[in-house]
Length: 409
Ligand code: NIG
Ligand code: FE
Image (tube, rainbow, N blue to C red; front, side, top):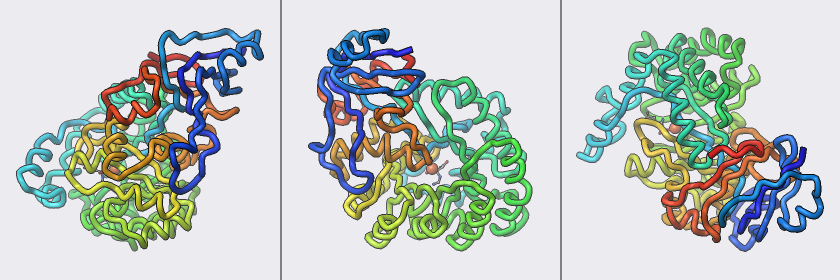
């Protein structure tokens, strides 16, 4: 059954953009008065609405009621939205002069969210996560990655991963689950960091595998978490078992991106302190650098090195990092609009980083553009000029979102 959706004032299919490096706005294909033909949830063709109406005579037509700009559905490739509790006190403490690492060392930070998350039932966590998925959908996100990492024991990580699975089941937004049991060594683990990672490999990974709770693993490489050597050993074993990898790296100290490249991770995320060396390394690899402007805004830290990565020839992705500690705001378009202003990114670079390049950071090739055969995930903003979307820095929300061709709002 063919459906024709439109007419949109502008459609940006984001097809045929360079797969890596910088992109100028004049490289964007803009289809004016456009339509999108969909069949079985997939894009058949994007083109002029009137032409498509004549070409696909049998198609049912969904006329959109107002001026809109359509993009591929947004992909948030890095979040921690399965959590309980608040860290408003961390925010206030940081703003009173305490550093993120000082707060963590004093028993706040990630560990305090672990306490709240451990105290919540699986059902409660699934409910909280589902509510956040609803928020994301209204903001135009059609695929999201969600990490565990606030359980930090076999039983509690399983509870969190099962809650993520439950939240995703039957929800419109596609959920990619990532096991971040290596977020930090839990304070109640009796042993060194290496022993904790070994325990995860021995006792958690087989259950994650058997229950298919996650295909991806993540590790936080930082002074407060794990060293590059510990990470290499952990990630290598996971890779041998067939998992895909991602890394939290170069947030406060460098080291994470080199590990990510060495281990063939799909992405390395943060990059606030990366330099020329890290950018060159990433540019020669297939590891996607992901910057997280929400953590910059939440912590008052430097921005991830987006311009540097693009100029070096990397395929940059942008994600929200939505979490209760470093990135409580969670509004990806608002963050991307601010990142663009500070890092001097073109609209094309930002849109690619929220769609096709973000899809690759998650290992997807079936979404991220409105090319033929792609899943018909579409977000439309109530404006006549695509540049308004970032210019309004989050004030302009989507007026409609389609998941696999079906309207959602
Ligand atoms: O991506 N950097 C490590 N992990 C998270 C923070 C999680 C938290 O503070 O609760 C991040 O910023
Ligand atoms: Fe994160």
